[in-house]
Amino acid sequence: MAIRKYFQPQNKESELDFVAKTLKGEDVKSLGKAFKIAALALGYRGTNYYFAGRSNFEPSPYDFDRIMQAVDTDSYVKQAVQKYKELFWKEGWKITGENQEAVSYIYQRIDYMEMAMKKPFLDFLIEVSDQMIKFGNVFIVKARGDLNQYFPSKLTPVGENNSMPITGYYLIPTEQVRILRDKYNRPKSYMQQTDPMTYAPTDRDPVWSADRVIHLYFDRKPGRAFGTPFLVNALDDVVALRQMEEDIQNLVHRELFPLYKYVIGTADQPAEPEEIERAAAEIENLRSEGGLILPYRHDVDVIGAGKEVLDADAYLHHFKERVSIGLGMSPHHLGMTMNGGNRSMTERLDTSLYDKIKQFQKQFAEMIRLNIFNELLFEGGFDPIQNPIESDLSERCFFKFNEIDVDTQVKKETHVMQKYVNSLITLPEARIELGLDPETEVDDLFTGIQTTLQKDLIDTQQQAQDANSDKQEPAKSGQRNLPSKRRGAGNATRPQNQSGRRTSPNIKRSDNSWVNMVENLLEEQYDVKIENIDEKDKSEE
Image (cartoon, rainbow, N blue to C red; front, side):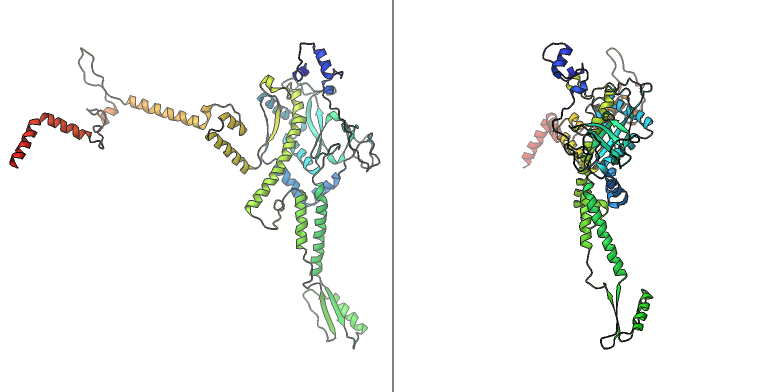
């Protein structure tokens, strides 16, 4: 049985006895029930709603409709979400694993799901990441169908109620999902509520059992059913910023169209009614580029054009910074150029944003591995939780994102190469750190190819020298030497002499030992004459 792979018995006993003792009275018919987690802490249920009982479907405590409205109407929120998605899938993704057969099987299942879903699998993943970034929650429903008649290998569905293998996935609108949980916070079913005025399921509201829905989430608090979207913190700041911008707009409008203060008459000479009516008509017909010609008793002032106007620039920058911080970005990521900055600071801010994206990618990849890849591997006959020590090869497959910070990737790879060049690590260890297959043919590497070329070049030169060698072998004993019949290019251009094929004797000009050798030979041959010459020289002296 499969359980023996994970719980090894100490003695040789029957399978039923071993399972019964291991499970301690649990239902031995279903292995899934044996591994079912028995939570002790009760799930959290808020008391803000009159339907807070556990027999009703629970809505999200966060206003997903407001978040969606902010993304659709506010430029800063829209650009921030778009920036997250762009960096999320900037360098692509891949599936990795020790067992290449399992990796190929996952890719093949994805190909079949693309045909069933009528869309690329990457588009499905991008939609999942979009819901995850906006709402912090994603609800994926499994679609099943009879795939065995089309798939090359046999597929075995996992679970008692799953009679057919998975053919694809589709999303439920996150803002419409309601969850029914038991008292231990375990989901029992999911409902898509299309009518916001009711909290009980109707015929128009589809309901799925918990084993058919995959719930992915970020930042879910203990005991809660929904994850916390990070955009919730920025919504109030966005509203405050837009109100501040509206006030500044009204201020500009008031300054462009000032208020006129028109004084007619004095205490000694009060204004007549006809003068006031005539002045009102003149101001109403006054053009912006025109002027007034007034008698000495009339005085006109413009209110609001002086230096006492409030400077709201600092307040505007403050609320812009609050919005950018709430969105998890720096102002320059949203196109704001306030407060200046240099290249070093912007690089550090970019690195901080990359770290935030990588944390999202890490959680996203683990959720895909656990909730999607593992079930597909079980259906294909693979065991992703098998102990690799027993089989020497793990069948687990991983969803891996490529490095989005290319500069950091180049620095890391250069550091690994330096460790290998300085003999700190071996070639397989270096390839593992670089994410490559540790087993490779050395002859296929650049150094191996270069060594092979050098060896071939030396062999070719040696063969050329042997082919151009025209030296005649001497005759054997009892035979006479005949004229050479070799008339090769080497014999014609470089004939052989007493010095071989060299153009001159092999004399080292820097070595003066040959002078002593010549003197010794002369002394041996002309010893007498030299002595006579010496004696003759002495007698003459």
